[in-house]
Amino acid sequence: MKSLTDYKKFFSSIEDPLEQLDEIEVLLEFLENPLGEIEANYDMGSISREEYETESQEMDSYFKWGMPQISSIKAQHSDLIVERSKKSWSGHERLKFPVVWNRESYNKIEPEIRTAGLKGDWIKWLLANFTEGKDEFWTYDDRIINAAQLDMYYYLDFLDDSFSVSYSCSKISNNFVTFLFNVQKVLSLKTGASSKRSPRPENPYEEKEYNELEKLIIRTMKNRKGNNKKLTWNFVLKDLRLNTNEGQTVIIRDLPAADDTMKPGILLYEDNSPTPTHQLLLSTFQKKLTYFRKLLLPK
Image 1 (cartoon, rainbow, N blue to C red):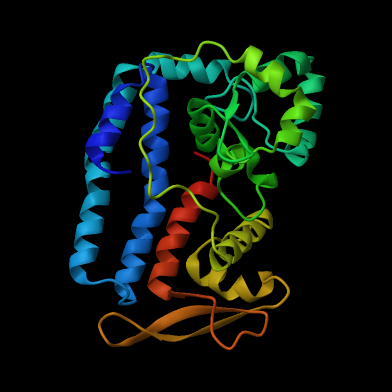
Image 2 (tube, one colour):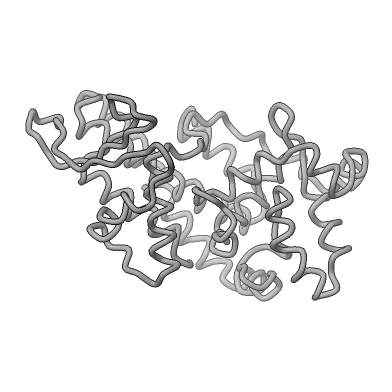
């Protein structure tokens, strides 16, 4: 995001208070990870103290502005929040129907929709909420993506090595859209878009896929959760080696830190490479677990 000022302009163009609430909650949730990356880069000596302070202060400004916004909307529109929750699909607090982004997610969800006798309404709803995305992809409207990300717990079983419904819902292939209907039908169903809403400002922190070490951490946490095991950092750390993919090796040893001392860290080697492809200080690993744990557990 170019600046908080740009974001505030975009935010004020959203008229629906529930859409505003979802938008700011998703933004602050998403910024937790890059904020941790800034701290990690400083701890490893990759950026100067001046860069660290500048970047972290910029991030903090979003939280200082955003948290009161969330509290205010929840206080003023509690009745709308409750009403929306009552109308939402089972396992959701925000969406009328579940989203899908490929055949795997469709095959997981379709049986319960069919059993409810609402398949026709569901397909129509999906198509009506698609819009053209980047390159060859389709995406859902922002309001749908935000709501789905906040209702992510419903989708955990088929998100692979990710906690991002947002990423999945932004990379929908043309073949899958054709499977649901066709582009012409999607465009004909595309109605009711607000002309008063400003375009989203450019976001330099645009969501990317997690790196292989982060995916390993997520995979380990998911497997431990599935086996009703604790998600405290020391147990997850111990189990990392049990959840590596083929060609991956995890080593726990001291790493050089920004203060010219050696501190405990995690190194991930891949495909017999002599140098690690990813590494984290143990302190950063603990912070990431705090962030990932918030996403993994139901809201």
